[in-house]
Length: 140
Image (tube, rainbow, N blue to C red):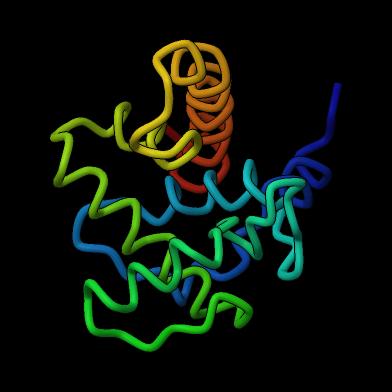
């Protein structure tokens, strides 16, 4: 049996004080960070997504232009803000958290088979990690 000490290390509450979202629970955002980058501030995906929230530099540029912000994708807190901004945008666009999460992972214009395969696996991971975060930090 895994001790709670190890669970808290694998599912940290790091960056929680910087999470600002009117739409999403901090534990959901922490779950996304855990799945996306395992809390590595300088994680880089094979496709070039960067940081805690694994934001593509092109997406960062688009978000900054669209929302008139000046976040730096390479700064951990800015990266976090960009990821939240993007997820909120995708949610408002689709009206569904599940669709927004799949879009976050695969891109909003990806092919249906990619959405079902990679997007479905991603959605399952985020949901599983979110359940663990809720168990550890809220007790539900």
